[in-house]
Image 1 (cartoon, helix red, strand yellow):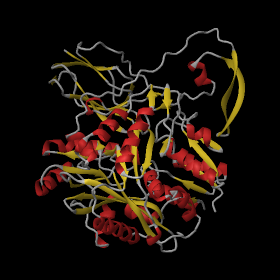
Image 2 (cartoon, rainbow, N blue to C red):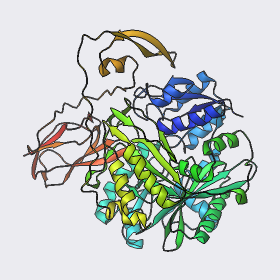
Image 3 (cartoon, rainbow, N blue to C red):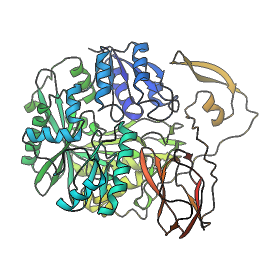
Image 4 (cartoon, one colour):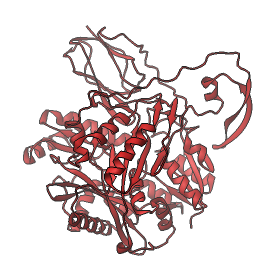
Length: 588
């Protein structure tokens, strides 16, 4: 069995892995960026090492820094979690070349399935049909236009080396192709470190059904059941459930068997998920995620299996100890994602900030996997997932009502969250009747009357606070230590410097200041980084026209003007960091 695991990730998935390792008696090593110095996963691990930098590229996608932490800590294995390097072949090979166990599939399997194009070809070779598309990397936006004319609009552009909706863009007409290709490439590069994209048909009203698989080094492969992940926004999941409702059992069996065939076709080992699109009684292979999924807890709740435990056992060389016939499913589980986003009006605007309050739910059948506690900061530089709220009950309706009760007990302040949208989804007759699809949230769900905004709590400014004993973070040769010091009790400001739970944001200078509404000033709705400008000084613009693209929490957001006129001044440049309400352009 493995002795010490370095977790090359952050947030709730790092916390999740630490907990299972602790139960198994395995030591854990955390790594962290400058902004995550006081993060929950750092506080929970047995050891922690600084990677430096703030952005993902500077820290969690910095291979030399991670390799140095492995060497310093003496870790014998690395768990990549999901996102970041979890499906990066070069990283997996760099780990194994150092004689360290990669807790995931062999690099050769990531080569095949981590690349969504070659995975389509592998699935076809196993006799499993995929969504109609082109199995090669896009070289130009003209190829998208040609494909759209062949199969009809809309079409979908996707990241070849990623998943989770990152780098995915829907193109409804030829005029959108160029911007969509450029945006998809930027998002794919930012989140997965690879810009390659491809195109496929966009189904009109599908359900997103995925199959969890486990494969060991001894040729055993089983499917553990399906998850319905259809309620989505921006092609990213909001609510998941297992088993899928109104889903024929014969389709379930065929889909599970297809998932095993696809896994064996690439020599897969460890936990993985084969994703399908299901529409009108037919299913199509979508992709294989060669890692643990965000929504894996609901499979754990209905099967009684700890998937992280099995990842560790399989990576240690153990064989799966049960057969397909011995897998049983009990009851119904639902997961909702608690994201730092404002869902008001269905816009789902990223909302980075400090959690001034985080009251967690409890009671029978409730599980919360969170990467933050009250006082922690959700940074603009990383994914906005605060945590995953999961419930289990004997049947779907009982689970739905239990989730609504648990959401009512969950109170988060300091950032806007998706909780109001989660409640709207779970309460809607379409969801209750399982008549939803991947397009349902954005096309039919009315979110005009909800809001998720929450103002941060006021901070103390009294300089005459007495001394108090605080734990302070110190680093020696990159390794993190906790020491105790007497410091002035100056509230949150000093608490951040003295080792409390607030992260520090260091914005690049933008020279922007907040402006009143209706002044002709174009302001940004959130903290983020300017990616590009769509206009220049002197251009004529219309109401609602996009002025610039803002990246926040790995998502690109269009910043539009509310006034028609001429661009008088552009106050920031691509690469600048801006805050909520900052002025980026003036219209006259």
